[in-house]
Amino acid sequence: MTQTRIHRETGKVLSRSVRSQAISVGSLSRTVEVPGWYPDDDSDSIHSGADLKLLDGAFEELRAAYAARVRSVRKKLRLTQEEAGRIIGGGRRAFQKYENGSTPPSDAAVGLLEILDRHPEEVETLRTIRASAFASGSLADQIDYRQSGRTKAKRSRTIAA
Image 1 (cartoon, rainbow, N blue to C red):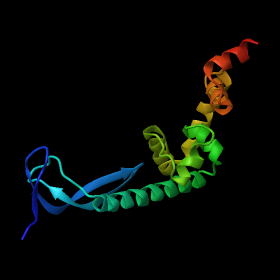
Image 2 (image 1 turned 90 degrees about the vertical axis):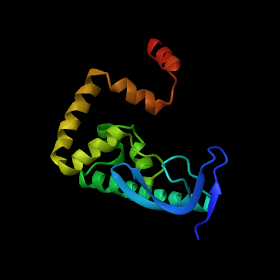
Image 3 (image 1 turned 60 degrees about the horizontal axis):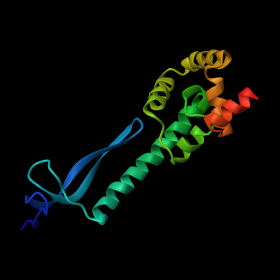
């Protein structure tokens, strides 16, 4: 016999069952079977802490797998973490955070990583673009600003002095 209960806010009948939920980190995705109390339609469901623990565990596994993927692609391109942060984006310490899984890369960085994984020769194109932007000063102030940790006001006074 199926267990049921009434949703406190919607008044809908919920049944205890399992449904598939897609999760993604970077370019990786996975489907997870999540237990919970579900209505007949796709409206609100209710989950216990134990139900969500399964989902959280799967998400953490996927996050670790993507962190390893970022490291693998960076090494394939023969870039240091600092150089990858400069060329692909995110700043000086970005790839350290991406590779330990503490911060996911932006969608733009994910896109560049996937393109460079398939076309590693294009890393030279990005190096050229970043070098010319740095030389013109448009990127130099951003990088110097991020690395110094100063506020814009302090940066302005430093330049003016």
